[in-house]
Length: 256
Image (cartoon, rainbow, N blue to C red):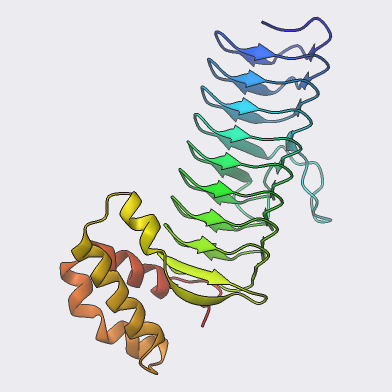
């Protein structure tokens, strides 16, 4: 299951039923879980811990030192969950000591060709990064979010769960959950209602999310005024509470 031309450094831990293709390199402080596929010409360095069932396509660079001038070769980490797909030429970097020292990727994510996840990012579960989508350092991306092709996210931004970033967009502020955003700089353009329906949200829940969106973006209220107006609904509707909690804790402020 390991091609004879692959280089596996002493100390690397390789799980059961792992396939490693020709001319790939696995560093000494890398742990690869069961049933993972590493195609040809993949480089995985560490410290990196990878769960089970992941698939790395050719020319991916995983767990490399970050592109940050403050980084001084400290032993930072990359942690990857289960059943992720990393297509051709993906790059994922380890963390820095200026944050928590770790880049984290959850499970069931799809990273299409030439996508980039920078140092200290936290990526949730079931996200999609379309071709050439990139996140700068310290970005957080919530579950089920989709980043369109050629989109870019500024450092420290947070992308809410179930949001949708349009192709070619540049995100410089936080995007609340459920929101569709597009443009440079990205602005809100409604609710990702089709995505919510596909994921089993009830029609009542989608309606309440739309109403919360209108309160925030269509009634001429400040963010503080909108949060006050949504307090009672958030107390009884968990979908709206996710929306308001995110806004209250948005480190860079939200797109408007």
